[in-house]
Amino acid sequence: MACLTRRAQKDLEELPDAMKTKVLAVVARLDAAPSSGWKLKGKLQGTRSINVGRSHRILYSVTERGVIVKTIRPRRDVYR
Image (cartoon, rainbow, N blue to C red; front, top):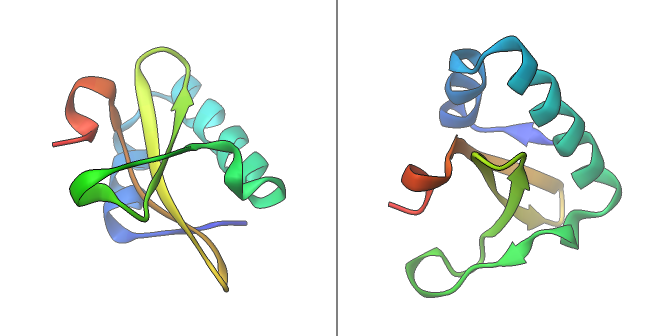
């Protein structure tokens, strides 16, 4: 499974149970297809973003060791 940073782990713990299961399903899919998200530009270059439902996004990066999930936040806050 993908590696979660401390920030991502804390974000995951704060989510409701229904959203947690969706997030974990998306993270499991990232292991199989790490390039499925969008490449970000600007100060977030090197990071990718993927949707979790309509309201949340997962920011992650792909390294030689695998996928590293950086944060899981609501869409309105994730890119700040």
